[in-house]
Image 1 (cartoon, rainbow, N blue to C red):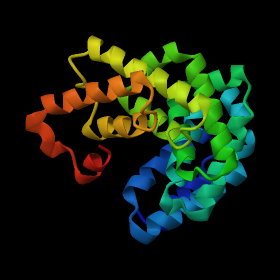
Image 2: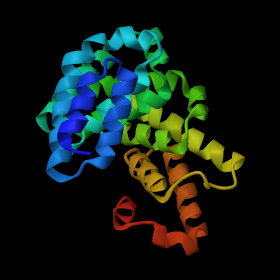
Image 3: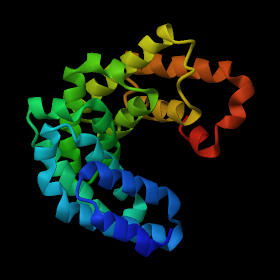
Image 4: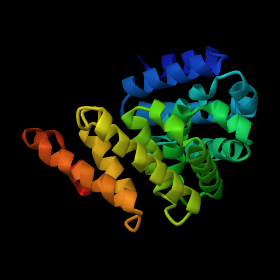
Length: 241
């Protein structure tokens, strides 16, 4: 599909769920210059048409559309427009009260945390991630509902501000959930090599925490157990160890 066709499709959409689905579709299909242009124009469109409706849409259960769009446009190819969109959404998230941030849901919050973590020097991203960390700590039982990828995204986001008490407490909660799954599942079979590497990289930011060390040791044991699958770990994964 050509860039013009992708942008025309995006322009016709009026609902955030459909918008995010189209963004993800074209994010996969477009390449090189067209890909960057698409994400940057999409980021601008996202800000102009949807960000102002964020809280209203959260109240009716449409948080995932915002989270997936933010995750896409905040990547490097999204350029300055993507950073600005991420910053504006972060400002919205940081202002949510306890009831509203719970309505966002931990799956969407994990995507937000990962997106905001890309810009650790942006005050709004820091404040929003701390707000997410506080929610995860308060609602730690709900971590059981997340898949391994979402757990890794949360830890990745929190690890960008390891000095914050909320980040540390939330990461400890995630580490506890990872250890709990060790006893529930056949080892760490649900975790991909990249997922394991992300968890180790995140937990390593809190080396003085016993549960972080225990989780890292458990993951190391899983890597050894997968000895015949080590080729699945790419160079980037190994750099996390």
